[in-house]
Length: 173
Ligand code: ADP
Ligand code: MG
Image (tube, rainbow, N blue to C red; front, side, top):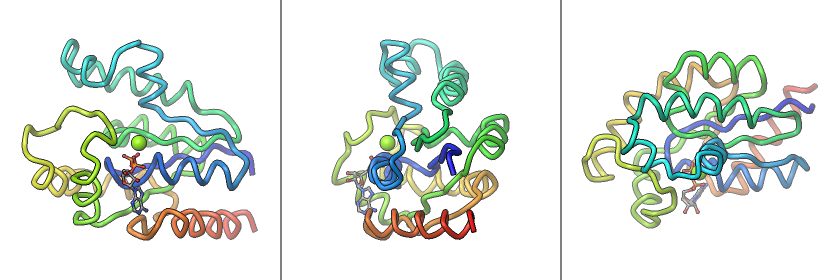
């Protein structure tokens, strides 16, 4: 299978960590929609949002998603990529979409341990502890709607990769 693999889920669910390991395991390239966007714009997400607002950021994110969608690539997406119906449809039609589902408590632990792991402006202006649960509650249905497969991303990264490898073998059979 050479189709791109899209990893979706909230900030801290492991898209970057698992994405790199999965790409190694499958001998795929690794891309990240936020990294591509920031490199292309020569600005951080925070700078884009501050200067032009979230709506413009979302437009640029859709362009970035299309730009990184190539065969033999594992693609880590931004947590809000699923907000746009066109992005959900594009990913489903152009690859395999995997939702890395982690518990709210695991997400909070990770984000509090590594608050700068991903430099993103807060979505609600609230502390991480409150924001994570609130944002996930709003988005959970969209992650599920977009996903072909859901994996337990509260497990250790190696286990998450194993789950995905097993699932992909099953899907190809
Ligand atoms: P995302 O790209 O989805 O925002 P990251 O891959 O940057 O998430 O992970 C956020 C933090 O959580 C990192 O510090 C990473 O080491 C840690 N982490 C990621 N996946 C796991 C996991 N399965 N188990 C434990 N810690 C993890
Ligand atoms: Mg990431």
